[in-house]
Length: 376
Ligand SMILES: Cc1ncc(C[n+]2csc(CCOP(=O)(O)OP(=O)(O)O)c2C)c(N)n1
Ligand SMILES: [Mg+2]
Image 1 (cartoon, protein in one colour):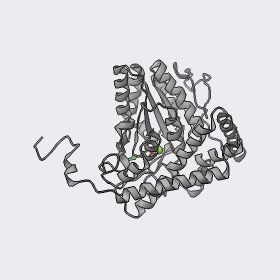
Image 2 (spheres, protein in one colour; image 1 turned 135 degrees about the horizontal axis):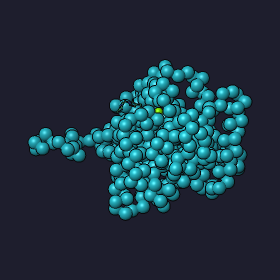
Image 3 (tube, protein in one colour; image 1 turned 120 degrees about the vertical axis):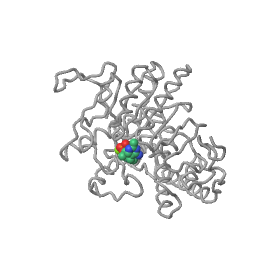
Image 4 (cartoon, helix red, strand yellow; image 1 turned 60 degrees about the horizontal axis):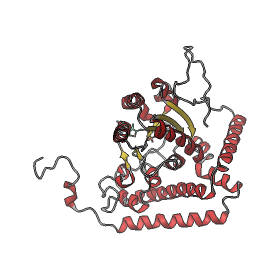
């Protein structure tokens, strides 16, 4: 949920509102059942209001993308269990509203960089499910020619610059991309997605400082799913309100409900305007939750089933489907047709990946800096 800022006093007595920031987070988590219910009803009403601002074609496209990401990843999990996908594989299930909402606020020529949990962002940026699945299978027809796998999806044609496995690695890279666009005089915007555990890395702070100082059109989106592998945010971070960290750099920031695709879209649209029009960066903390393990090999013994089920009540796809039905924008028949079409797309992608050739062994020596064959 986002809130317009009202300056508040910190324990030190200092004014807590950022000089350029417009929004602050109301931090407290609800601590009893009736408060939780009330909070959920408020958020439902907010989503209903947002629906009224958009045409049905846009709304159904957002739902369609979220369902496509969900079904594609369910297929990934199945293929991984069958041994068709090697290496690491981190699913995005539960977080779909973040990538879909955020990227719907961009122009096609804007840039996106993200972490290893990248399947959803790749779909939303326009890489085809066929090329994504083929990449996961390590096939030559994959978007990274079968050399990257799940963590390194990449497609320069759609300005999707990865898929990065080093926690926080994409944050300074995105800062550099934003610098390049400003230097060239384009009005493109760069989005950098990362988890909350990346916020403890030094490069996060170095990048925010530089982006604000140099007025770079970069939007930093922290997908706070509350865990870094098996470690909860509470055990790892002294100041857990990530959005507040922007204040140290006088950067605009916002706290967003990551289970509401339209809340994410609106917050990112505001940040995009700030970046494109005023050449200013923003930090968004998008609160979400991953329903699956950290990766396919996570036994998940650091959280309870009850906790997961509590968050699944606010499954972003379930919430949005219900809101669209209530507003008579979606019927059961239309939803069934959408599901059928998505399943066919996913089956096609899996078949395409299965039938695609392995990369030629010679490919080992292309796209590398140090080539042992010519002694460089
Ligand atoms: C620099 C670095 N340190 C440690 C790791 C190992 N590692 C991989 S994922 C991860 C947790 C990251 O959590 P978060 O940033 O919250 O992203 P999430 O997985 O929740 O999306 C860690 C510590 C790494 N890949 N890179
Ligand atoms: Mg996390």
